[in-house]
View 1 (spheres, helix red, strand yellow):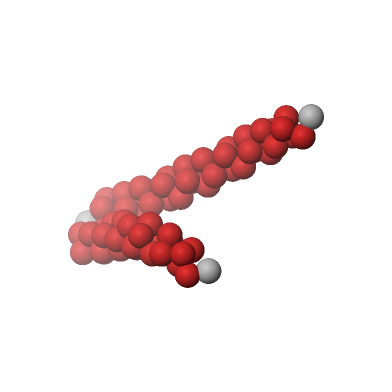
View 2 (spheres, rainbow, N blue to C red; view 1 turned 30 degrees about the vertical axis):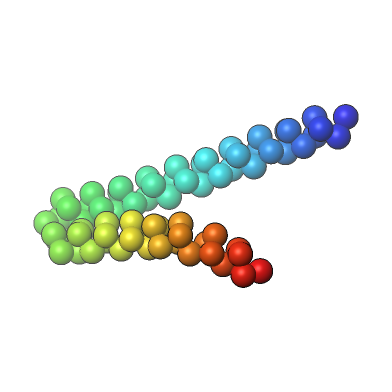
Length: 69
């Protein structure tokens, strides 16, 4: 009985995570596209590089911080 409740809760958590990632990626592409269309090449490159660079940094720093706790 308890396992079924956990699976339903897990499904909602996974759906929430997916939707959060989907909207974040959509916002990144929208912002980059708008900068690109307005011919702001330096700002487009900086936006795209910083978003991805900080994302990868968080990917590696996050697990390291967890080990410290």
